[in-house]
Image 1 (cartoon, helix red, strand yellow):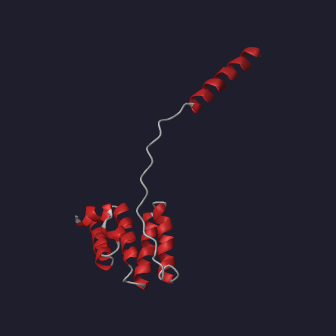
Image 2 (cartoon, rainbow, N blue to C red):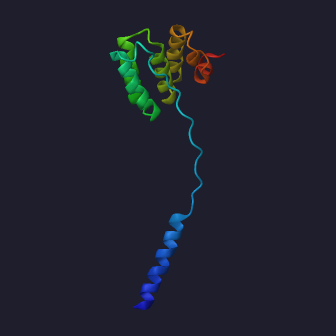
Image 3 (cartoon, rainbow, N blue to C red):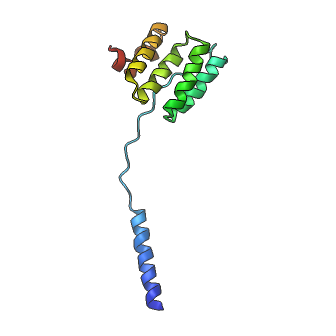
Length: 128
């Protein structure tokens, strides 16, 4: 009986030690670039859709975020931040041609917004 208990304890200790060994951690993923709605737009329905989309984009729920950005753009077609965020969502889903088109719109509408013009992801799609 004692022999069975000892064997069980040894197995439990070995299993516990194996479970406690540190696994090499993956480096953290860089944050997803997102743009909030500017003052004056943030409190509109389009701004609200963009805000919800940004939350999903930050969690990498690209397909859900896409819908919110498309809704924001339908409500306010001249919303460069929503176009930018749509481009990021499409890029995250591997829809490169569509993402490029969204970034073109973002840059066309928000050419004076440094966060759009100087964005690495925009430069990747549109060039410097």
